[in-house]
Length: 294
Image (tube, rainbow, N blue to C red; front, side):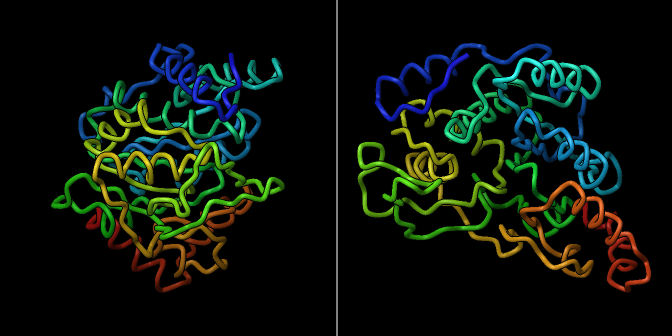
């Protein structure tokens, strides 16, 4: 188990070698059993965030009309606490939806986590048509994704909340600090918010391939959807249905967006109950038409 957050090229090369080896901790889940799989959602989660994963399993990630043609998995790294790893192992056995990889789970390792996600998808889930990366504090509206986001006539789709001409932050006290020796350009390539973005399976293969020779940066969304995408001539696309803010508690809002961010586990339960409250006309209309959307 290793920490790969040194900025030196030699350290990143060692990390890449480790990623290329089979580093997933068995049992490793797959998608092969679902023949009609359209979308696989991989949720990046920290080992200790069991409550968040349970909330997703009980709400928008639950197998139902909402997730028709969809599978949800959680990707988790190793914890510095052995007891937490033991709980994760038990969770893997019980739910079969945890992708457990042998790197320390930390903010600085998020790029490796996302590369690991691409490695897992392109090895164990190639029967999916689309792939979504999400975080465990997100609300994801799967029916809206199918109705308004996943357009079959768009090749190599990569879509989410787009950032254009974002500048690297050079303030060492910032969570998003990036030193010059890691990234020296004035602007990042256009990229998507890491809170939630969707790609076609063909895009996943291309980004996974370029991740092994792209210049490393510790910001996973910049690296995957910006730097790697640019290397593959893939243009990340804006879709206004993706939000990276916490939305007001209004069912008519949540039923017609693709994502909302910064939700606690309690928020998810409350939101799920809210969008089933048939006292609202928008709720009744949504559930009456959901089967036509998938």
